[in-house]
Length: 505
Image 1 (cartoon, one colour):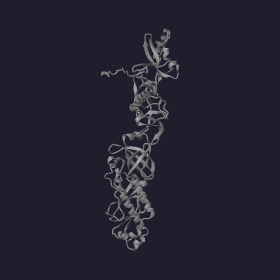
Image 2 (tube, one colour):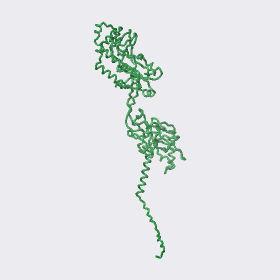
Image 3 (tube, rainbow, N blue to C red):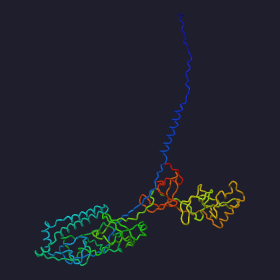
Image 4 (tube, helix red, strand yellow):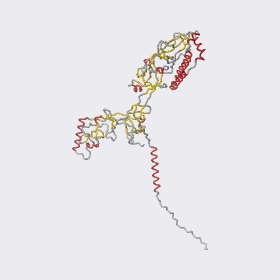
């Protein structure tokens, strides 16, 4: 070796550049992914318009009231003091001469009855059934807001139990009491009628005395004199209801007055009684100058003999039509055009309706046919929408069509092929229309209630006529010329859209 260092061979290394191959599949996938992501985002963020399908139906909107009962009541008083015992039950009919009660001035009758109470005061099956019906009726009509009714029921129940016990015990005991030398004063009915023992000071109440205070039940009481109770002289002990005719008086609101203003009779459903009656309806001014309603009946008075206040509902006649939600209803302003100005024949189609609009040019006055959508009509006016691209605006003059209706292409001087002779003829016909048929300037307007129909994919206002309502729905008239039909789709919330809005369902 010669000891010399050998230099390493430095070779030039050139890195290999891969060709850029475009993956078409990945690009298409990316585009599809971006598109789907955007579509999902747009769907999630766009405003959701809910719709409602119009159905046939009706609304029975029963209104509840509390009324006070007025009857032909005569209070009877005792002419002496002593222990009282009744012989006839509450709500039973008595004829003249029927024994109603007895007064024992010595107390011997009470001692005699007490000695026999263990053996003779049991209640039979009929008595128990009456008590069960009484309690069932109360439980069906009880409301926490009228808790004072509990006390009325308690008193009535106590009276019934005592009366049943005493009546069972007193049967066929007259001879036994005479043998024991017991003398008592027996009182008989001096007039025929239904007997009641609850006396509440409203027996002489007249419609002229009715006021809001009468319906305040917070201080109302209906004391009942019980068998075996000691009564002073000249105290009220029972009353006779001499007629089956009776009335229910109840307060009315302004809405009630409007609802019942043309009614001469109303159907009332009484809570807990399983009873619906039709009574003659009338109104009157009370002592406080408020208006009250009165229902007059001539039967079933006995069912309410122990009651002064009664809860009931007025059952209106069922109104049938199209059922729509209240939230779907809105109002819209329209311009009024007299019915005599309607023209037909736009674009050569005799079914196209519109109006002849008066226009001006160098050749004179022209009458141009402008198609218009009719939203509603009366005997005097058509309701139309103007502005935007309708071709009509406030202040425009309309002329009545005379003779044959004129289409727009027949009148417009700008139409291709229009000659000066044709233009002059159109101007002449417009002048004749103005002279013979009259002119009307657009400006008068009125509002209509309606909903937004979306059958065509965009909102179209449809007029409605409300027949009945409750808290959630309206019943609207069916078969209207410019109105709704069954199975139409309408916007559920009318405040969320406007006329002509596209709807994505």
